[in-house]
Length: 317
Image 1 (cartoon, one colour):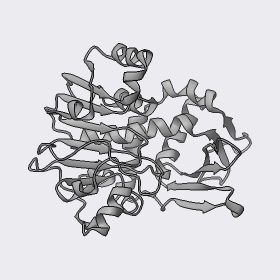
Image 2: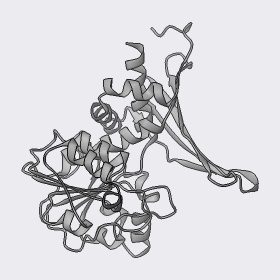
Image 3: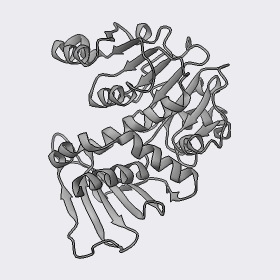
Image 4: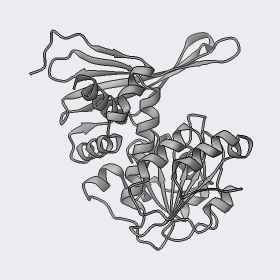
């Protein structure tokens, strides 16, 4: 039984960062999408609430799991201020047994980890078992987290990284090369993707960052993008030539920029072959190998809830 006499844990960004080395983010995402696939979890659509007087907005990410006996929400505000806007995110974790709050925590680091771990889960399901060449477009914290979570998933022979920031930042380039001996810095996205088995797009761009015209059959391209209206890291036309997967088919097509734009041009969201929940419970077809493969995630409230649960368990250990 849950001890209702305990106060909820409150963790700031540094507290969460200190606990993350004890958290298996990929395992948390596997558990989440398994529960979702078994009908033990529910994922409502994210909602955007505009503040009056053009003061900004906030996005609400909700999720509930009977398997984990938890529910909660992440609130991510965009606060208009003179000069630079204020952007934060906090997750509240609640007990389904007692209705009491278990934890309130800063979501910044959690969002980075769950985004990368979700992509890693897709790579594990969708990349060819013999995949050798990994390409990463982007070089920030999200890109670094992506590499961390996929390193052990395949026997990578070459890891290529491309970002405009690398050419301008010798320290950052050195950090990447020190991460793994297989890391090579590419001069362009085209060079990075040449002959790649997996291309992970890890940018905050609202427009395409990688030309998919020459992507070979069987090659997996993953995308996360950003909250900019209709943001898309690939040309929407790519969806008509690729086998498409996403994190959750019930909500992703209505939020992912390239999917919305492709639908306006005639692409059918019903053609999505599967999502992570279906892949986890083997309820959809795997890639055929006859076409390129595209995976798109938008970020789910349940991802935040399960990451918060893992952090809570680490803090309570």
